[in-house]
Amino acid sequence: MEEIKGRKITENIYACPDGKYRWIYELNMLTNPIILLTIWKLFFILILIQLLFSFLIELFEGNAAGWFTDYLLSPGVLIVPGIMFVLSIIAYLIVAAIYGWKYIVLFEMDDKGIDHIQMQKQFEKAQGLAWLTAMAGFATNNFTTAGAGVLAGSKSTSSSTFANVKKLISQKGLHCIRANELLEKNQIYVADEDYEFVWDYMAARCTNAKIKR
Image 1 (cartoon, rainbow, N blue to C red):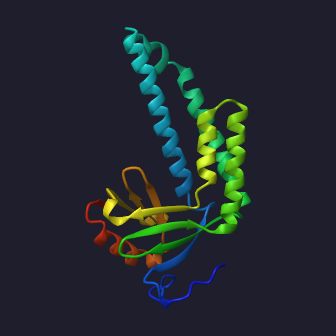
Image 2: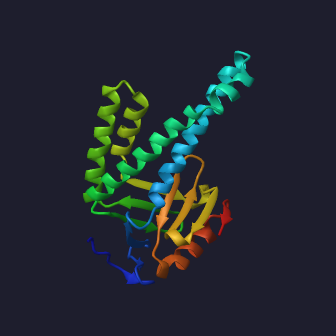
Image 3: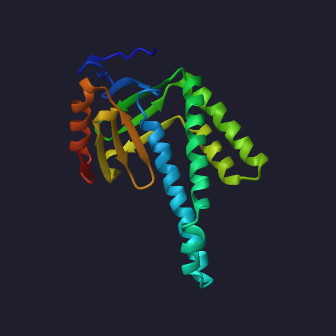
């Protein structure tokens, strides 16, 4: 593992000579479901969007009542979400196994913001998987899947500017702090022994955020 140089502040956090706090967190992908829960949340939002669009189409055609009886209340409406749910678990376990069941992240934090940096060795694996996703999307003419794959393959860092954070959410039981901006949602992973230091530091600087503890 990469060594961090600096003055030790908490059990795992170091104050470095360049003024940044740094720590490395190893997320156990088998015992901590935070990433899988995030994937399910995204799927849920996509399903809601799909339902909204289908309802608006039927509403425009004057068949809103039929949409409820023929589509929303039909048993078949659960088939696609059910398939997505099962496939998401299988895909997650495959990726977790490739990673060695650990998602390793370096965090860099100062008064202005925080960076979530996937360690380079794992990023190379993630990049390869993302490009495979992109190619699969092109092969099936699914340009949404292809675009998502390309974007995932080109990004190893998520950054949050404290002044732009709109919502700061504590999920201590999952060793996570969520920093949500308008278009950027960052997940900060912190061990129990370091959690209060990072939470207090971020909460004091996210002056425009709704704080949820």
